[in-house]
Image 1 (tube, helix red, strand yellow):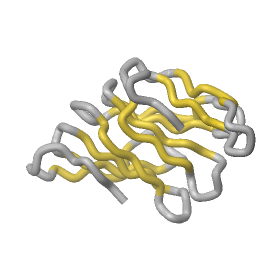
Image 2 (cartoon, helix red, strand yellow; image 1 turned 120 degrees about the vertical axis):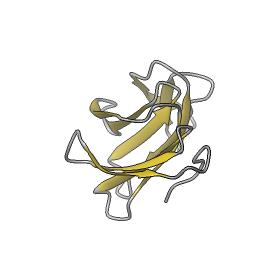
Image 3 (cartoon, helix red, strand yellow; image 1 turned 90 degrees about the vertical axis):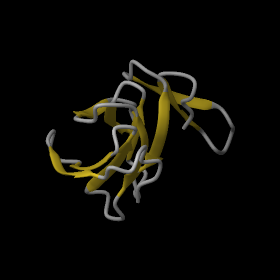
Length: 118
């Protein structure tokens, strides 16, 4: 996927090097993106303070999660693909269920920008 400095993630075909589809919906530049372990979904985060889940095959939005008060710098799937973690400039990390619109847990870190989650 590609994002920065655009508000769009782009999925590329690794065989022919051509773009296949754009994931359109963020209103600010993207800072993080990751494929789910099975390759069926993509999660993105960016300057619009949201985390978004996409269908990788169609490019259709699945969920939009709000809750961070600042930029979302990083996103990651759990190994089973059921959970998404996000980290933000607001000094928080959050965990989301791919089956729900509500956060599962938030972590107030008081450590500045969270730049990596796993």
